[in-house]
Image (cartoon, helix red, strand yellow):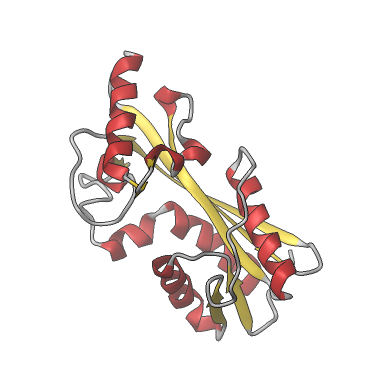
Length: 202
């Protein structure tokens, strides 16, 4: 596995919250983190049907455009009773003409579960795949998951996306009810990051 040996890492995201989270995780390693917006990068079209495929598109496009190693992630929620949907299309389920509406997306998910006739518990997992790509085309891949179930009605106002309807295994709270530090400690992204740090920064 290739180690990260530079001092600057490009994070292929325009999400300032995600950028801040990644910067704090890599701070102990003395790595300067810059975002895609700072480098004026456009978001490439995500045309793959897997998390790793879309993460690779974003990481390699950013590394090629800037000459810097680039980190990207693709994440979403898989619901077993819906044959793994929405999966890589998690954000698409929230798209409207005026932006993303995750309350609508959560309602759509619940409606489809009811229509499926499959009884509770509705098992599900959040997935995150991190890809660290270098300008020479090499990459390393780190998948992370957290298992749980879909609950209804929505609970909590913390987090984002589908967090208010996802209750992780072993917990009574949904991600939407959890303190963000607690959620970040057990999340799919934390799982993937632990593997990234061990593999490329340890």
